[in-house]
Image (cartoon, rainbow, N blue to C red; front, side, top):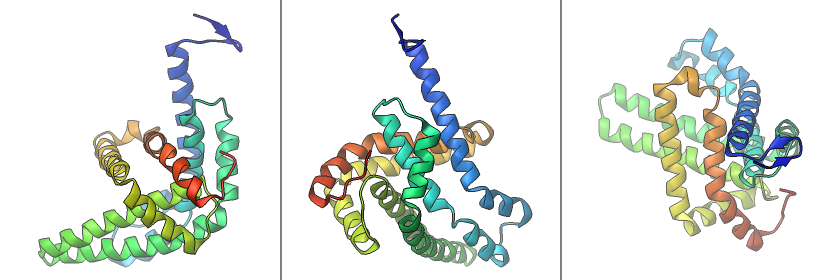
Length: 227
């Protein structure tokens, strides 16, 4: 093993470094979405409390963009201060992430509510359609926030960019969907353990897949950020 920068250049050291980075940015993400967890504790999930849950999601898009920004740094295996990177990603993308996020939260919520409504009415096919639209809206949001973490875009051009990006890199989008579903299942099965890492791990795998595509896409769109 080589002695580099006060630490051993070994596989074990890299694993520990990754785990600590994931733990820190996952914790920052959870803190950034504390409003949702407070809402979950004090308000029972129901249609009557739906407005509280929707409002509690307002901080989510900014925190998610910051998560993707930091994950893109880790993907490069670049020595970086993850806390500093997360805060920078949060600050620089706050306004556009908020605007985009509010619209997407509203759209996704409408689809999800309709799906639950038709489930109660036992109209499973219609419920499935709205559930699929809700999932599609969530994936659309994730792609948009990942683009914002690396490219300067206004709201109008962002929606155009998402559509073009999803069309041009469809196979990568399918992998993102697979990651999203897989990590959701794992989180559901082992919530207490995965709560410590799941959001950071998902962001890492997603950005590992998408960052080269975003770099290629950004050559056409321009507006690079320092990533």
